[in-house]
Image 1 (tube, one colour):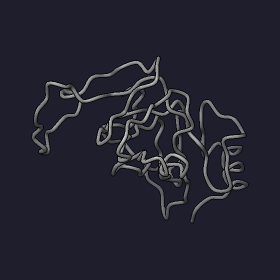
Image 2 (cartoon, one colour):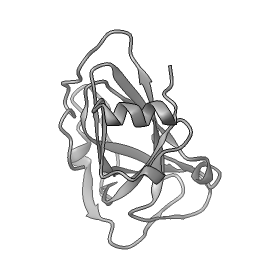
Image 3 (cartoon, rainbow, N blue to C red):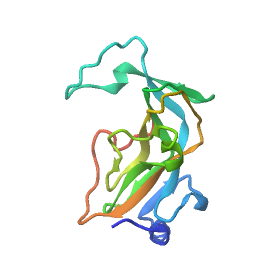
Image 4 (cartoon, one colour):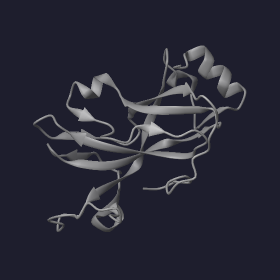
Length: 169
C-alpha cells in the first residue's frame, strides 16, 4: 500500500525512511519531492552506436558534467541526473520515482524505465531525464524535479546490486 504524508513522517521519525537533506515542505499528500543535484551525465557526441548487450556499460559512452549553468536538453535527448537527497529505506519499504506533472506537461520525462527503488537502499537516485517536447528544455540544478512514492513490501529484502552504494553519476 502507498504511504500517505502522516505515515511517511511517522516512518521517518522511526528511522525506517531517511532522506538527507530533508525539509518538511518537500512532503506532499503521498510523496516527497526530490531535487536535481549539480551534475549530469550526457552521451558523448562522437558515439554513433551502442551495442545493447548484457555487458553494456553506460559509463564508456557518457561523460559527467557539472550543472553550474542551465543545461539545454534538446528534443529527443536523454541524460542522467542524480538527486541531491540520499534515500535510505528499511528492508520492508520500497519506493517509486515519479515525474512531477508540472514538468510532464512541458514534455520532460524524469525516468525512462527504472523508477523502482528497492527496499533496503542507502544511496542517491539516478534519474533518466528525457525531452519529448519538440523544443529545447533548460534543466536547472536544485529544481524539485521528481517525487518519490513509498510503499510497504510483503516480507523484507535488502538491495545489494551494482548500484547499492551509488553516490555519483
